[in-house]
Amino acid sequence: MLVGERMTSPVIFVAPDMPVQDALIQMRKDKVSRYPVMKKGKLVGIVSEDDLLNASPSDATSLSVWEINYLLSKITVERVMTKEVVTVTEDTPIEEAARLMADHRIGGILVVRGKDVVGIITQTDIFRIFLNMLGGRQPGWRVVVMVKNEPGLLHKLTQAIDEVGGNIIAITTYAGQDIVGGEVTMKVDQIDEETLRKALLPLVNEIKDIREIKVD
Image (cartoon, rainbow, N blue to C red):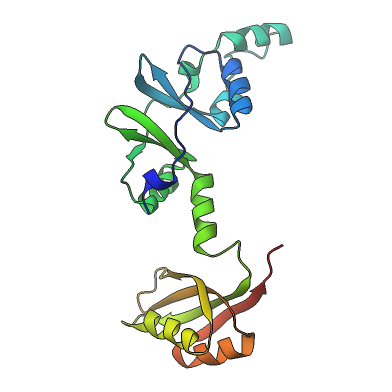
């Protein structure tokens, strides 16, 4: 899965000379949490809702509320935006975008094509992908098993479930830091709990968790 398949496009942007109060009002109207900042068609920064909310005039403690509001009206996006912008391209793998967000502690990344901003992908998009990958919107048995790190094991697990009539909706693996083994999470339907347990037990170290998920 690539960023270009999941990004939001087109992207709404703001100018660096826009007052932060106006940008915040527009952000709430547009129902977004960050804007690319463009000047004469060139990307010069990115500004988030937190940046705008945290904007304040310096040495404001001795000022009246009217004076503070006046000064706030003069603060522009350029003063609070982030100038070092992390970007990806449309053909960036989705997990690479997620890694960049985690490493840089940011909630969204702009997608560029050459010098043009063509989209944005946010942590909300990543959450939706994660939800779909785990079959979070579908009912069934959610089972987590601990397994050895050996070739062909996933094939054996899926084959065992298929042979007893189960249908695998989703399957994910998590190796963690243990190179000896890992964790496999599956969502399975068209099967009962006892049959599922019997199918898996000969192939796994442990059934860590199994529960029925009902989706309203």
